[in-house]
Image (cartoon, rainbow over all chains, first blue to last red):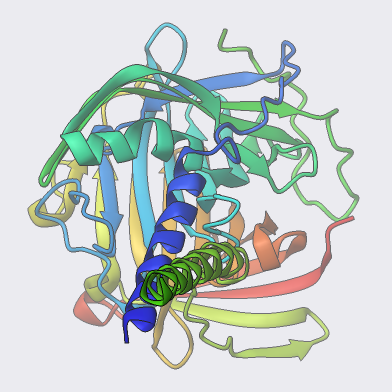
Length: 244
Length: 187
């Protein structure tokens, strides 16, 4: 009996050591920094990244996060389990609202405990009234942010520090997301996209989050895609205007 | 002397069982962490048919029941409990954003939909956590609303085609039906 107890204690210590090693270890501590080559056709849009900074944040309630606004119905349907729906106002570098974005996403089945990867598959639908509209498909890894800021904030109530990093890790093999232009001067354009975070403070309370967390969504179109003869509408000829 | 040796022997065996448990726990936890996916999405089979126009899949929205949020730069006149004000944009272009639940032809909720509109643009995104998203852009609204499927994400990546949006009924019985025709994978 003593040996069984000793074995079980050892088992628990081993599991604990594995979890501590995963959390504290160097694996997955930072997403690879992929310098995104920008040019005059690129676009950078920023938004308030702490979750209560969104105009709308609906989710299924699995995470202990507030709904925004608080009186909106949660995504309780089984089909929406783990889903997140956000609406953000997107600003240029002069802090002017130049676009609105809807972000749908969910934690991915590719998420793993070892090596740690908090993979979140997300999709942006962005409308920029002066330019047009576009979509972004991306795979994000939030583990570096969770380890650096979110878990400490959850433990202690708040976190202060300096976290800067990319969240986009795919689907392109170059660790970038896909940009697909839809209308206006962006119609027919395709390219890469990347999202990054700069965080200095985060506080988590049951009904509200506060903090200094800025996300930046960057899109870089490839060359203008040739329009097929099947398309009814003519291709846009105006260049994508830089917001920088 | 024998008793001391026996006590030492038992201590060693206890330590070995502790060590065996520790190693098994450590390696087992890492192996489990590698192979076991902590997230599993519910997959609802899609109802599709294949025609000359492509692979047809139809989605339904019942606005009275399925509208989740109605956000606008001009929220006056929207239902108060679902209305969210969008901050004015630099160009002061009126913009609307709506989020819906989306159903299949068996009226089962299978995902989410979003619609963004300005006077010059009208786009939809259909999202299913187990499959990915589909990106739609409206081309014309009269006599019927038709548009292009520009692509998508995950298993819907590179799927392009066309769609038709039909509105039926009125009042509480209003329905939006989006019939998508996937014609090919994008080159």
